[in-house]
Image (tube, rainbow, N blue to C red; front, top):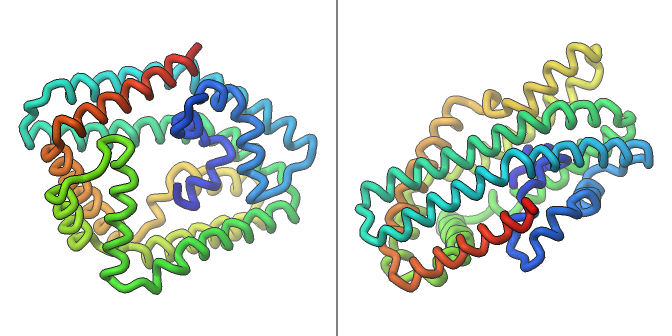
Length: 285
C-alpha cells in the first residue's frame, strides 16, 4: 500500500479481513481496534476523536459488509470457473488478467468514494499540532520507503521486483518453475524504474496538502477532496505513461506465468480461492 493509500487507511483497511488468517471473520468484526493501532502510527487521536472515528468506521464497515463482500464472492467464483477450464488459451488468459485488474480498481474507487466524506470530516477536526504530526509522520514513512530503493543498482532493483512478484504469486500457485522465473526476469528487465518519479509525486502531493492549511474552510475542503479522491491528476504525463506501460507489461507477464502453470499449481490456486470464499462467507455472516 503506497503512502497516499496509507493516508486513506483511516478507513480503507478493508483489506485486513483478506489477510491470510484462519480467523478472518474475527478480524473483520474487530477492525475498529486494529485500525486504531494502525492510525496511531500517524496521529494520536483524542478520546472524542476516537469515538467519532469508531462511529464513522462502523458505518463504512457496515456498508462494506452489506454491499461489497457479495461482489468479491462473485468475482472469486468467476475466477474459479475460469481456472476449472484447464485449457484456456494464452489470449483468453490475457483478457482475463486485464479484466480482473480493472475489477480491483473498480472496488478500490468505490471504497474511496464511500470513505472520502468520513476521512475529510475527521481530518478537519485535527488540531494544528495533530496535523503537523500527521504530515511529518507521512513524510518520514515516505522517505524511509525510498531510501534503499533509490540507491540500488539496476540489477538489484530488478531482483527486488522479481522477488516481490514471486512472493505475491506464491500463496496462489506455490513455487514457480524455471520457465516462469525466466519470464519474470524478462518482465523486470523491461520495466521502467519509476521509484524516483513516485517519490517526487508523493512529496509534491504532501506539499499540496501542507499548502491547504491556511486556506478558508470551504476552499480547503474542495481541494482536499481532490487530493484524496483524484491524486493521479498530479502525476506528470511522463510518469503516467511509464505507469501505463508498466501495467501492460505486468499484465502480460502474469498472463504468461498463469499460462505456464502446472496441474499442481492450478490446484493450489483453486484451493486458495476456496479458502477465500469460505472466509468471505464467514465474514458476511
